[in-house]
Length: 289
Image (cartoon, rainbow, N blue to C red):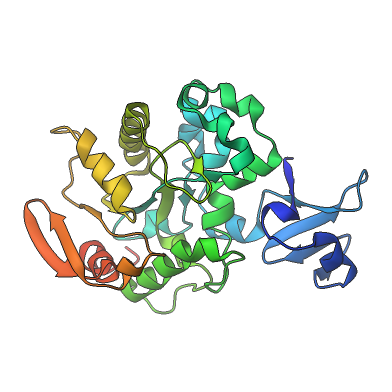
């Protein structure tokens, strides 16, 4: 089973946390913010399993057999979308689409377009790299709308929006992403702290991948939460390739425009509201079938 050091998730001294017993006892391992950590036989530094128990609880793996047939996921299985446990039971199948994953500065050569898309980069990635592109390990890691990194505020803000849309108020509230699916549009990671320098290869790979993933998941609503990804989508869009008009783009939920009024374009019409309001408007009420 693949493992990663706790430092890949949180930027503080792991060994001191362990010694100070700030990690909750769960013999023979310890648990912190949803991840299970064990002491390696070869080192006194705790290592973390990719499989977050919180994620296991809120996800639906029934699509994995088909998704794993895709060449991209054979190279980079960590990038599999998070499909919520209640996704298929909802009145709408909403795919929330972020922008991209990130890799560390020292790993930037591993994500050059040619080596990334031909799969060569897969053998170059170490465990820390894989943890940074692990969709389910990031998007699904929150519990009670609390996440271990400020960088994950995108998920928390999307969760709050989904909460407002749910008609059935007695449904599980631990992680509202269980009612939708989530993945990032661009299939190549950006350098950390910077937006992806999008190439033609990025555009075509992202667009064709979305068509395939959308078909496998039976998506009815494509909810972009990145204007960069949304605009790239429309640059590639061809007639007849999507049977739904329920495709829209909002600003990134961690940026100021999520709560600031601005213009939104939708099939030739223009609307003025915050991106949060736009997300609520375009997705509409959610309920169990």
